[in-house]
Image 1 (cartoon, helix red, strand yellow):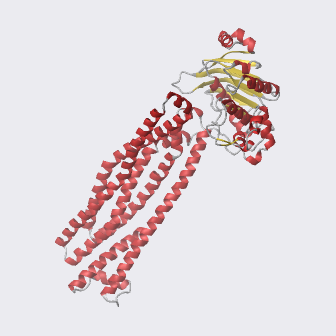
Image 2 (spheres, rainbow, N blue to C red; image 1 turned 90 degrees about the horizontal axis):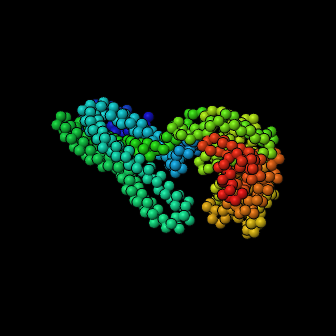
Image 3 (tube, rainbow, N blue to C red; image 1 turned 90 degrees about the vertical axis):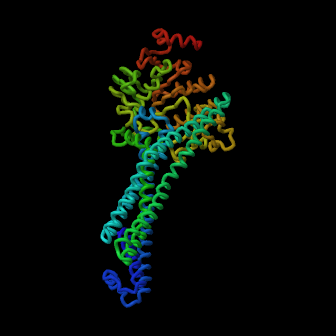
Length: 577
């Protein structure tokens, strides 16, 4: 419908050209002109007024088409921008619910880029640009058909001219755009990685005087990125300048040809029609050319996103209940039992490391320690137990159901404390109740767990107490305070299964003993599992599991294990136990 407005406008301009020539030659107007004038009921007006009205109608048609095109383009961009938001959220959700093995194989900055900028490139530069290309192709088809009806030679010449230009531009530019797009993505990820790495290792970098090294790396990559960005932004304009020249050359050639084979009146009419059509064809061809460049560049820059979509969509993902959990400390119906039967696991087919024939049964009141050398499989064992990793064979059951279903059905019944607690940019309160609304957790509950982890005195000494702000790096907290804050975060839901991954490693001996005493005195209805290098924290465990090369080599209480495992006994001796 909108393309027909362009045809009407172009034909009317050609008609005015014909009328002008006839008027200058004082000859009668063509039959076609008279029929159109009569159809518009302008036959009673003088030629000047007729021409003026036709020009106004032509301009209105062309302006209406431009307005419609702008409106359509805006709608497309807004639609795909919102789609980008939904896809980004969906992809992020799938990543969180997907297999941890796949997440671990990707650098975090690549994943971050894929979920954010990569999705935007895919939605706006690929899909939205594709819609613009289709719209402009339909416009060009209508215009060429209209010119074909009027003068087939002119239509053929126009198609050959603009077709040749488009082909040459595509052939010359698209390979370059693809190469630049890949480099742009790689450099963006690299810059973000360097900045994150330097800030994350601030003290180490400061002492080792590595800031100049990081500054040089970031500066070099940013300089290359600036050149690539400038070239990517300039390439679409290349087509603009080429097409502008083509319009002038094409007008000269077609005009000359028309004057050679037709009378002046018809030649001028067709020449005017070509110029009018050119004003619509040239922008459309430029938009198509620019959109194709954007599509090519967008596909290159969205490579990480496309790989993520391939990995995480249309797959049978885990059925994790992805709803905002309600704060609960009772966990009605949850049974603190863990059972692993004949569990085997391998990260990849090519990987030599895996877990073999793991059998484990834990009941309420059990305090279990897991020890072993670095890389022995301690964390992998816990990840299998929690459902973070899926076994290659065998079963893992928590409360007589799968780990994933247990987490989804009883949020907060299972808690995990990592070795390095992640501090969020917010208050003490927000750091303790991460994942829950402020109004759902009472201050008394928060103070209770702060007392339990020996942090209440420190928080009480702060000017704003629970509302005291902590920065993301946790630089205004000591290592031990951050560790205790992580313990409080895990304990706030009164978990029935508590997993500690070196969670007392940053505590002084006195506080570690204090926390150990609490764990031992408050475990009648819960299971506590502690991965430990410092054996003092698990000395009172009911059973200690010694892991080596992905297998449970031995188990028993502290003294029993010393007798069974020489490696464990040597480790205990080295620690003076």
